[in-house]
Length: 318
Image 1: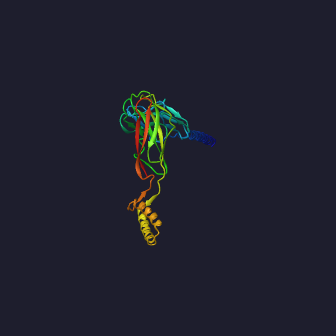
Image 2 (image 1 turned 60 degrees about the vertical axis):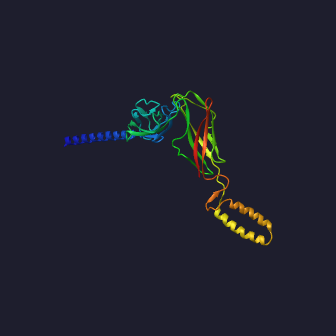
Image 3 (image 1 turned 90 degrees about the horizontal axis):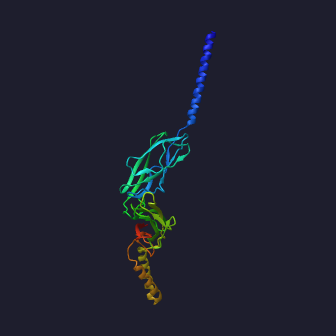
């Protein structure tokens, strides 16, 4: 009996130790948490335009922020761009990269288009977060720029023609792109002109002078924001109403004539001539001011050496 009691006590003690070990192990697992993976900006990451054969500036690559919103360290063991892709990492990963919970890591990305048009690739992050591997999409646009020269373009993501609303302000980006082989070039003047009557145009950031150079280590491109303010439309007169006014005026003229009162007759005759000049259509016609029309805005970039370059931007005023 005593022997059985001792065996039972040892068994219970063993069970207690097992329970303690399991509890400690479970707590440890709970304390480790789970890593997370997100990017800023969210995929797809837009790298903008670049001249064919030119790398976006090493001095100002597009940052890609890898975030760890989880509760455990995120370990990125590799970040793989497709073989031969035009997109590369400027800040080389020193694998593995460990990102603490709630923190982020910011490599920079470069774009070297080998052809004209929009290009998209998918890079893979090999990491320890759920959902591994994580796909990050990158996009950019190759632009044909003459060698030893530069070009002004509207951002490829902006619709053409640019729609503007009368009485409002519209903003959109433009780019100056250096072509391969361009020597150090200073743009001494950059101006807006044209557009609807009464419109005003500004460029930001405030322009003084900027430099372009056609090599991989210089400022190979520059982004500027165009802000266009269009005045409101003037009042319109409906021709149908004009004809009714003329009919009423004719009756009044007849009364004035029979009473030999010629002053009102002359005044209304002048008004009638004005109304007749508007025509007889039933649709509205804008008075002098801003009609619903197409127009163009012209951007002129003048280098210190060489001829000015211009960009004509078609507009539709609504």
